[in-house]
Length: 208
Image (cartoon, rainbow, N blue to C red):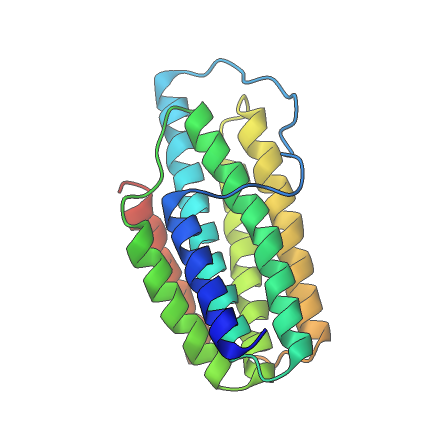
């Protein structure tokens, strides 16, 4: 595709992401697991945590789309586009689980997408190796974040737990691939800034 075509595809992806018009290519990891009865407080906690995870996937779509647009090699562009497709599965799975829990996505998803897209453009403009390093650091932080959610999700919420486990495995693989492809370690201040921004996002998305 030429640059204009890629931009149009990226715009289409943005609209689909923020509107919720996404579909998973892979089966939902929750499969036929039972939706166990939970108390009101436990169900509320599950909904809040899955909303945060859904926001994370909205941001992942924006980051990968922006980095694909700014990739300097066709190989890296294909890598980013493949990762974005896998993250679409996560987006659809978390969206489905929110509906099952009777909860909702974040009202600020358009803002989250726009902010993450801008960050992805900046990372991509700094070169392919830096862009890959950004993927490594982002996915490692997401992996740790998902591990924390597994420790907080109610034991009875086996459907949410199965989804988060599958997401965690994919994020780890994305980080490994980006590192093997030549990703460079980001400076410590950048890593700290990324953690701080992620913390702000998770606190707000937990409620709004």
